Image 1 (tube, helix red, strand yellow):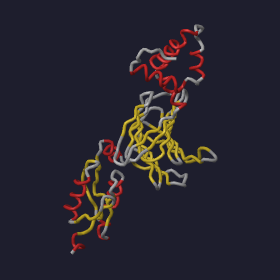
Image 2 (cartoon, rainbow, N blue to C red):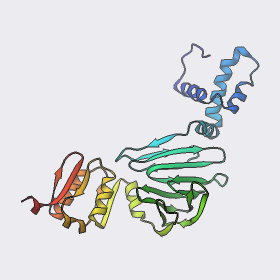
Image 3 (cartoon, one colour):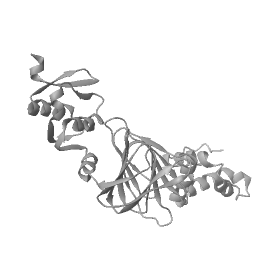
Image 4 (cartoon, one colour):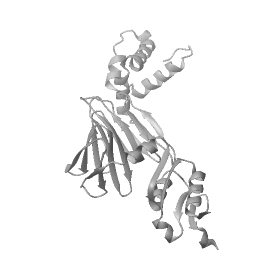
Length: 286
């Protein structure tokens, strides 16, 4: 039981962490090591302090086994997550991941969206990312995983990764690709075949810097990318705009600048509500 002395913020966090994991066998072993009942609370505090301060990463890994953290971003939001071993996840818009760390395992489940994984090398613990029907494994590298309605793509920014198509019933299928820097592996949902191609690293570097970059991009494709970051979706209202191509660099979240550019370069107007913006040729309004 705690004493009446007011605890510091660090002590309060340690107590909270100890309470969360005190049933763990390793914690029980440390707590049982005391033979002085009157010093029990002090031993509990010492164990908590030792776990939080001394054990560091090992303790955090044990805690993550019991409570796998879940991280997510809203539409238009991005977030960096630093993992216990120094690896980092950069979550793009509307993304969700769950982290599973153990003494011999590092696994991230990408449940939706897109993320960059910057992996600290550890030969004893490969770094796995599960996304849809794929499993990507790396030891120390940086790669992007993009999960959309039609499929999953894995692009290597630095280093080498192995991408496998996974069958829920039989484990890994023959669909396996070893990717080096600048390459991407794409797999359509429901299809175990992996197609390798050149990665669009410019797009990845752009979103990481909160930019959208288009270079002679078909308008439908540009709008699809823009709509990932906006709750107000822009749609094409006149058929002739389907074949138009656009170029430009825009800050993510700057809807006004994006729409202004479309109006000026395409001779178009925008109509709509807070949820949907329709892009039409000005002549159609006459």
